[in-house]
Length: 434
Ligand SMILES: [Zn+2]
Image (cartoon, rainbow, N blue to C red; front, side, top):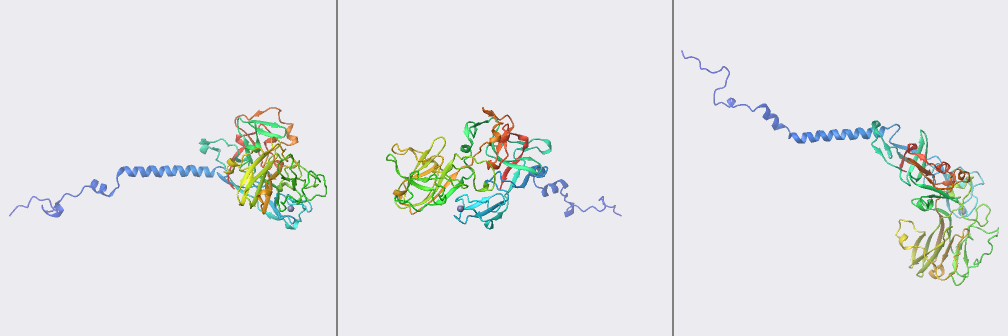
């Protein structure tokens, strides 16, 4: 009887497929996996994304919001930002008008022609909504200060605490020299209106289409009727002045008080403040916006009064429609072309505080359409009551202190009553959208 073969029970005979060595477990695993190094990169990326999301979430969840919506409630930043307001169209001259308070019947006057407006034409407008970036200047997640940036001159910032936030414009930053000469606020020696001529739009003072341009204009008077109480400011503000000393023939703008219709300097009673009781200050910064269709090419001269030095702009015009703004906006191409220049001859300029704008050369250009809008800039005067708290000499803003003011100076409570400035900590955030 043969002995059983020395094979292990159950083992496959040599040569059969099952007898080949099986692939090791390590080899099988490697075959199904992506390379080891890219996997690490992916994990690091995921962790980074999570960290960024967590920080952003923390930032967004800070106190009552990183980006916080707010509604403007007051008039101190007009016309840049409006609280609840009202609009009307003058029935006399069709000028648009917007103001901040509900008008009392019989008290609303048109800024352009002085006509009283019936309150039935007044319609309410919603207040402006803004977004405050509360982390624009300081961001300290978990108490660790990661962002600390200084507010810049011109920024619109929210100051205060809790629900009583106020929006103001930063005029002075730490180290700036603040002074008052007469009524003029100066920062580092520069008048504030010059520093902040833009981006705020000028305020219209008077708008009129000028139809009678012929030299034989019957209203061509020299100084006559300047005290005429019966004058109509809506139609008689532009009048020709006869040439003096061989100088040009000027069309001169005469300004009048809307309240008693007497000759007056231009004051800060711009449209949105017409219902307010306050002290009115003279405005030193005047401009002209002119739209005209020229028939005969030529040169226009525009004289603007200034308390420091009146100036003349020479504007060459070809035939066709033109839009001229003097002084030109600082960022415009015209700013390089329209530079003030002397006029020929020795004739005195026809401009002063009550006649701040004059145009020469219209007769030569033969325009068949002229629309003139007298403008003024925004400015920041000190109130009489504030001046007592200001030192005679310059004051330097100390570290961490900012000088802020509202664009609508007559109705704004701001650093003019506390010239040492507000501390950085009172600035809640920056207005980033409106
Ligand atoms: Zn009017």
